[in-house]
Amino acid sequence: PGAQNLVTDNVTVVEGEMAIISCRVKNNDDSVIQLLNPNRQTIYFRDMRPLKDSRFQLVNFSDNELRVSLSNVSLSDEGRYVCQLYTDPPQEAYAEITVLIPPGNPIIEARDEVLSEGNETEMTCTAMSSKPAAIIRWMKGDKELPGKPKVELTYDKMYTVTSRLTFTVSKEDDGVPVACIVDHPAVKDFQAQKYLEVQYKPEVKIVVEFPQGLTREGENLELSCKFRGKPEPQRVNWLKVDDDVPSHAVITGADLYIENLNKSYNGTYRCVASNSIGEAYDDYTLYVYDAPTTTPKSTTATTTTIITTTISYPEINQDSRAGEGAPRTVDHAVIGGVVAVVVFAMLCLLIVLGRYFARHKGTYFTHEAKGADDAADADTAIINAEGGHTNSDEKKEYYI
Image 1 (cartoon, one colour):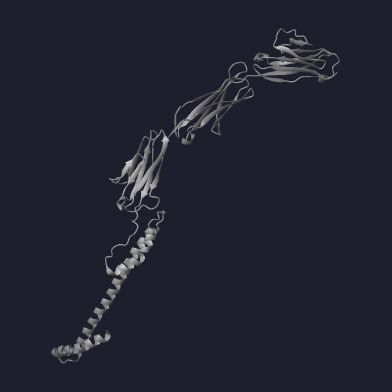
Image 2 (cartoon, one colour; image 1 turned 135 degrees about the horizontal axis):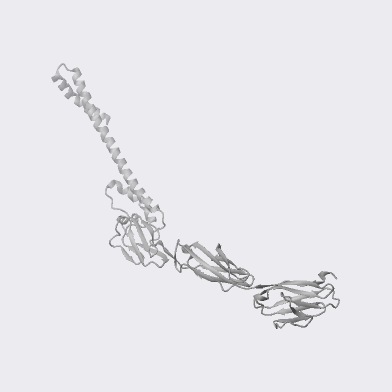
């Protein structure tokens, strides 16, 4: 019979578990089967065990198979086992037993317990004494990060792997787990993790609590300063850029309250929050608009009518606090219209008066000249001129 008549399989087994070695004969002609260990000592001869190692037990014996179990496998059991068939010449088949040794629990170590945003940190993860060498992967949250592995052969066929991870943290990393995942054929889902603690400077935002729309004269203003940071900011300051905060402004914790606004309060108000990492601020620019228009007392008779006709528009918008400049535009339009009418009226008056005086002057000079033309001497000229005044009067009336 050919050599392919006897078959067996390689076996991979985790240390401490059980290995099964199977010697199979395709076409048996009553030849004897036996199993030898890597040192070529007989473990089983047919269904008898000459070897005094009770970890070997007979699982199945028939004309076609010798199946043996080896319990509590150790590294020393690794090697090439021989199935032998006593034919002429004898046949052999080889079963390689490979023993896997799982790594010890992964040990994760961080250089820094508490970090500040923007800082670089380092972590190491160690998988001790495994066979074969383990592969270590790193995850920060759901993102994989590249580590630098170092593999050491500790003693006979055993490996210790250490992976070093270096990365920079941001405030978003606070509370995020960093996991060291160990891939090894002897274990599943083997990992250790550490949660990051990242301190960061405050984030600041000013919220306008009141009013909802335009800030107008006589109204109140309420600003609230929202902030967060790690550690939590202990101090929050309100200040006015390039000026002092109005003396009657009330500051309660993170809130700023100003009653009875007027235009002198215009400017940029700043909320500053700080902690041990740093400080941050947010700005709010206050612009106080005119109060909603009510009918003003007229200063001159001419402007009264104009103001009365246009005053209805602003009153429509009085309570609209939508943040648009419509009311303010109408107020200015009214004032602009009044001023334009007054200026126009004055210009008209000046033109009329100018023409009036110019005519008078012209009449006088003309008649004086006429008297002088007809006279023989100066006295006659004056008399002629006096006589001419009557004509000029008549002329004036005519012109008018």
